[in-house]
Amino acid sequence: MSSPADRQLSLFAAPAFARLWKQVRAALERSGGSLGDAAVVLSAPTADERGAVSGLLGRHRRSSKSLRVRLADLDKTLRGGPTGLGLAAILERLGGPLRDRPAEAATLSASTFAALERARSVSCADQPWFETWLDELVADGTVTKLIREGGEDLISTAARILEGLPADGVPLPVFAGSMTNDTKALDGGTLATLVLRALALRSDRPRPICAEDRRALWDIFGVIADDLASQVLVLNLPAESTSLLGEWLVGARRDGTPFRITLHQLSRYVLGFRRAPIWVCENPAVLRAAAGRLGSSSGAVVCTEGRPSTACHRLIRALARAGGELAYNGDFDWPGISIANDLIQRHGCTPWRMSASDYRAALAGTNVDELVALAGRPVNASWDSGLEPRMRAANRVVFEEMVIDWLLEDIGSKDEPTATVVPDRRD
Image (tube, rainbow, N blue to C red; front, side, top):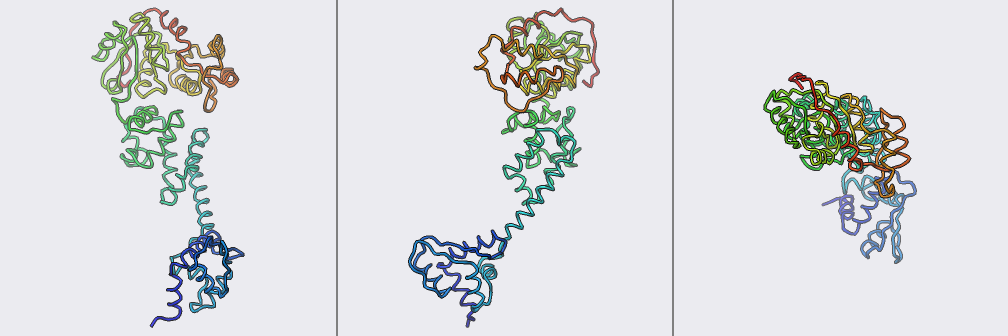
């Protein structure tokens, strides 16, 4: 025969008690097991629920819209019953261990702080995009999920990978192996997602949603997922016929036809260039207009198409070593200023119609209210300290297309290039 204690536990497992125990469990877990003066309220109790509570506490409960039960009263009654167990022990017998949510929250908070501090130990942690990245990972629950799954070290690993970027045209497996000792670590999965989220912020681009987006992001930071996908758009480059690629470029120049060069081609073929002014623009519309209006008489144009790809960086470096006079123009927005800073620092480009006075002149004669407002964090222009405050004051974007006539005047005014220089094959 079963004991009185067993019979009472069996009674407590009846449906009439189910809602009571569920609410009591939630209340105890919220308080970390403390009873205090806490109470639970059963709204619209059924006759069975009202009878179960009245029978347990030994008090008749009048008909009402709700039923209020103090946890301390419940605990005292249970301890005096056949089981001799308190409220917490009864709940654990019926439904398993109680959670201590305050302790869990404290542990989670401490683990989150530690994980973020480890991530902030890298040299790029002082950059605004890095802190935004961490803030977003906390806000959307990514950090909490990783900690609960035991993957918090992925955050500091991702930070260390970000510290190693940009690379210099390194294949993705090679880069992954150098950073993690696993050549497949960045092929996909959580680690790659964490890194790419940060790179999207770093380059002012949307988060990647497809394989092409991911390849493009890696490419911008010098990691090659596909050397055919990494491309650069050009017009009338002063190339020599020193290779098959050189012959193609000579032919395209003769015809005034835009040409796309892949990183694969730049890696395979030797290119020779003659010294010439090289006009570097951000938007394809500028190159397209140069081809359409000027054709074969256009100067040499390289288009970054936004953030330069690895192929673009490699070509510009080769042109610079061949004596090319590199001049860059981009959109007057914060990404455009950032791109200009990078090209000036990395390749010695000269700012081209990118001064504060050029910005003011571009705004003149337009309906400023119809222009797009600036978005994102302001960026200081390394070549003109007055540009950033003037842009902030006007709070408007000036796209290259708005000044395309001015740009074409420059592109079409230069003499033919002279003096042959053949760069090192490694370019």
